[in-house]
Structures are given as C-alpha cells and as structure tokens.
Length: 437
Ligand code: HEM
Image (cartoon, rainbow, N blue to C red):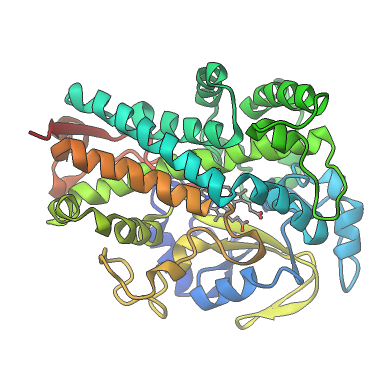
C-alpha cells in the first residue's frame, strides 16, 4: 500500500477540499490508479467525455452503491454484461434509474421525461417564481439567514414536490422527512482502504433510516389511489397511468422508485449549488453589482460556478470489456471513478482553470451534469430554479454579504464544507441581506 497518497474516501482534508488532491492525481496522468484502492480515476476532460459517451462498454450498475463495495461476482468473461445482469439484484440500489443500463434505462428515463414536458416545466416555473419571491422576501425582512437551511434546502424540496404534483398539504411533511437525511457520501459510509470486503459483510446492529423509504409510503398511496381511478388531469394521475414507450405499464414499485429517486437526485445537488454560487457572488470582486445591474448575466454566472464548484464531484462506471482509456489498459470488471469536478478544471481544456471567469467561451460543455445517456434529466429544472432564486435575491436586496462573525473576511474565509466524497457543498452559509430601497 502506498502510504504517502491521501485516500479520497476517508482523508478528511481531501473530503473537505478535493481540488489539490485532484491536481496531485492529474500529475500521474489523466487516467491513473488510486494507490490505496483497486480503482481507476479519470481527471482528464477528453477522457471523461469519451467514457461517459460510451454506454455500450460501461455499465452504470455501481453508480448508486458506489465503487467501494466488492462486486457480488468474480468477473470471468471477456464481456461481463451477462454477469452484471445475472447479479444485478445483489448490487445495492442497482434498480434505480441512474444505475440502470440499456433498454430498461431508456424505458424508465422516458417516464421521467414525460414529467418534464415543456408545458409542465412552464407551470412549474410560475410556481418556482412565486415560491422564491415569498421565501426571499421573508429572509430579507429578517436581515439575513443561514442560507442552506432557511432557503436552499426547503426551496428545492418544494420545487420537486410541485413537479411531481405532491398535494400542498403534504409538502411540509416531505420537508421534515428530507431534513432527517445525512448528506450523501459522508465519510462514515466509506470503508477504510483494504477493508472493503470486511466492511460490506459487517453485521448491522441498527439499519440506517432512509428518509426516501418514508416518502415511498406517500407515493404508494398517491399512485395506487390514482391507478384505481380513470386518468384525470393531474400530474400524479398522469404519472400513475403512464406507459413505457413500448406501451406496457410500469408496475407501482417502479413508479415509486422513480418518484423518490427524483427527490434524492434533485435535493442536495441543487441546494448545494445555491450555497456554492452565493459564495462566489459575494466574494468575486465586482460580480454582485454586475449581476444586480444586469440579471441576464445570471445564467452564465451559474454555468461558471457549475464548472468550478459543481455539486457532484464524481460519477462511477463499471467496465464490461477489456479496453483502453487514455494510456491505461482496463480489464472487465474494473471500477472507474470519473472526477467530473477535476475534468472541469483540466488545463488542457480550460484556460486558467481554477479562476472564476464570467462569459468563458464554451462554458456549457462543462461536465457538472454528466454527459451521454445518463446526463442529468433535471438539468433544465436545476438551471431555472437556481437562476430564479438568484434573481429574487438580487431584486430584493441592495447588498448581500457573508457574516464576518461566522465566515471571517473575504481575504480569510472560514467555510464549513460537508466532508463527503460525492458532493461539493457548504454545510451552512450565513448571509446578511440589506433590503433594496
Ligand atoms: C445542480 C444540480 C444538479 C447537479 C449538479 C446534478 C448532477 C447530475 C449528474 C452528474 C448526473 C449524472 C450521473 C451519472 O452519469 O452517473 C445526474 C443524473 C440525474 N439527475 Fe441530476 N443534478 C442536479 C439536479 C437535478 C435535479 C433538480 C433533478 C430532478 C429533480 C435531477 C435528476 C437527475 C436524474 C433523474 C438523473 C439520472 C439520469 C439518468 O440516469 O438517465 N438532477 N445529475
């Protein structure tokens, strides 16, 4: 074991700030092996794009359970696609949308796309605008708030609740349920290097409580009630009666998995983006005034934040066949961690990659929402919900600053990042809000 290389999954300094570590790994090449783990890491932009666009050779089966759990089989074929399908039921959470492959993935993704029709997104935008206005006015009237808990997190839960047509009366319950969840990818959930198999087999005295399971009970009720009635014009009814592109009807558990997965996928990702973006808005000299004077610059601002500080740090894939990625030979069954946050700072792709630059050419090619068959299905929603909340902050304030008591001065910031290996985001951000006159 190489003891000098810090471990991505358990070293607190890397969990809190991965960017130096990504550069150390990039120095080994755009595709390299993690010294203490049986994993390949991709930090190169071109290599990440090539891999993400190649769903034929790469499976997503481990994308939710992660690359640290041992596979439930010994890869023993030139193409392990058959083995993956045979053992899919033994890979935790491999039946969630993002972990599916091929036709089953395309079928489930079509059901999600049916929820995100242009007319549905338009109706949702009207809701989001009113919600953002109300929430921001509330915290401005108080002179400030802890942004993540008071705004970012409840705001994004309400937005997904609306997309799915959750009755207004239940939305506060959803909020409370989600508050119980730890941030995904926290270090307690990672086995120490070399202890993966032992850790996976450990007895569990108490099962972790998964808030999405509570939420599933609500969706079971909504969907089964509506299935029993003729279709009518409400989102949940349309969802309950939806069909796969081949005309068959999904079973109720599949619809429940999709609905709860949307809450998981759209929760911390969007909430953390709001926090990360606010920090840049306040700390990049001149930026706040520039955006306040011209709201049409907000989308470009958010794209640059997504590139520089996107909330998803890594995605994971499993090699079906032997192949080459960059200069590395990959065997079937190899688990690859694609550091999209590192690819988004690859100096071969981005000039001055660590600098914030508004209006960077080609900015929308960043990989913060992934690429290829599994590109984030909620990206349009994430883009407008975060744009709208920033429009409201800029409209209702004269000036926004961070609390110096909590976060020090701009030259010497003290920021509290979540120590997780999957997300990049702040645990809290205390903002002071001067009302617009
Ligand atoms: C800033 C906010 C967000 C970021 C950074 C983000 C990032 C990502 C990334 C990187 C993936 C690809 C995973 C992979 O390739 O393995 C993904 C997939 C996905 N995201 Fe997002 N996401 C965000 C917000 C949302 C929202 C708001 C929703 C919906 C409410 C959503 C729904 C999904 C879904 C359904 C997938 C799976 C797509 C598939 O497998 O076909 N995301 N997201």
